[in-house]
Length: 136
Image 1 (cartoon, rainbow, N blue to C red):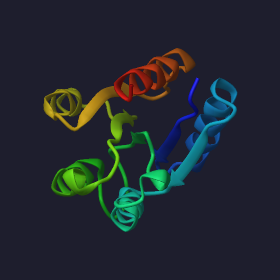
Image 2 (image 1 turned 90 degrees about the vertical axis):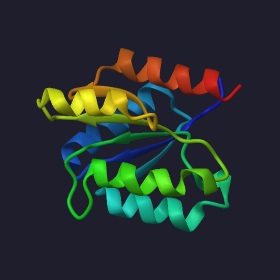
Image 3 (image 1 turned 180 degrees about the horizontal axis):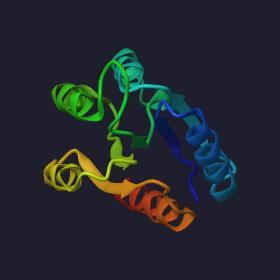
Image 4 (image 1 turned 30 degrees about the horizontal axis):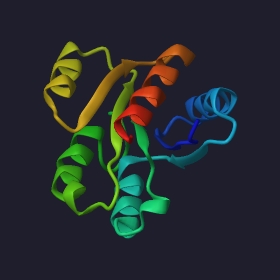
């Protein structure tokens, strides 16, 4: 099983700790990239757009982020996505209880899935498997 590079974009340090531990247990050889906000993640992608070895295979994106929220990130990402040398599957993982967020996410072709926190190991495994299948 090919190890995945996973970006966790969330300003909640406790969530980052938990999701990192869970991902490491599910896929010990995974590479996890942590970003405390969407702006940092966007800038990372922009800097590394021509270097696929540094880009994640999938991203777990929180909607509520300082400096740039998840929706703003997706708008900016849409403009940049075609210039990336690697496809990135974006999954929204949020504590938002607004049903409109899920509707908006499901209508966005850049979003591979929408999950409410806490995300389960089974959901993470399914996500990783979907990414592996798409990369074949």
